[in-house]
Image (cartoon, rainbow, N blue to C red; front, side, top):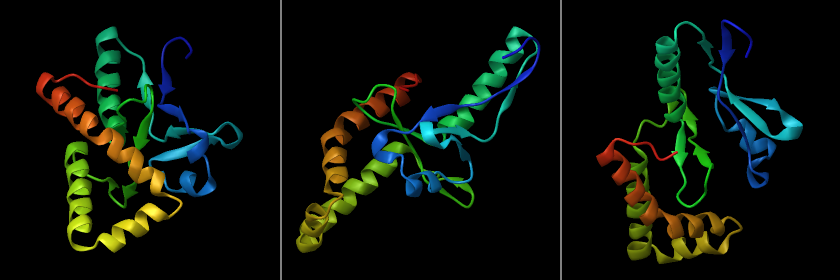
Length: 155
C-alpha cells in the first residue's frame, strides 16, 4: 500500500489438491485467479484503505463481513477455509452449522433407506471427502456454536 489511499483486497492460495482448472472455475464470479502458476485467487471486490484510523477500521470490518460470507471454517486446519460455491446471487445463504446438519441428515437418510447408495459414495475416488467431513464435523459444529454464543470469529 502506498501513502494515502489504495485499493485493498482479500487474497488466498489454493492448496495443491484444489488447484485444478475445474476448482478454479467453480469459485464463482466473486473470486478471480490472480497468478495461475502460484494458485493465488482474490476476492474481486476491493475497498479503499484510506481516511482516518476510525474510517479504516469501519471499511475493513465491512469488507471482512462480505468476504467471510463466502468462507467456511475448517476445524483442525489452521489458516485454511473452504470457499463456498456461489449461485447466481452469491454465496449459498445458509449458516455453516445449518449446512453441516443438512449433510448429516442426508447421510442418515442414505444409511437407513438407501445403504447401497451410501456404499457407492464410499467406493468412489472422492470418498476421502466424506471421511474428512465426518472426522471433523462434530468438533467443527461445537466450535461454530461457541463462536455464535461468544460473538467471536474462529477464522
